[in-house]
Image (cartoon, rainbow, N blue to C red; front, side, top):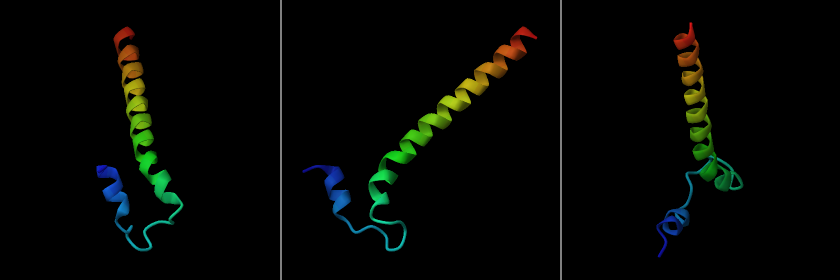
Amino acid sequence: AHPHRRLRGRAPPAGRDRPGAQEQSDRWPEGLLVGVYLGALGAISVIALIAYFR
C-alpha cells in the first residue's frame, strides 16, 4: 500500500481549508521553498559579487 494513500484517507482538519485546495496545498509549499531557496541564493551571490569587486 502507498503511504501517501493512507495519509490521504484520513479526514482533513475541519474548517482548515476547502476540499478543492487540498491538492494545491500538497504541491504549493514545495514550490515556495524552492523559490525562496533560489531567491536567497541569487541575492547572496549578487551581494557577494558586489562586495568582492568593490
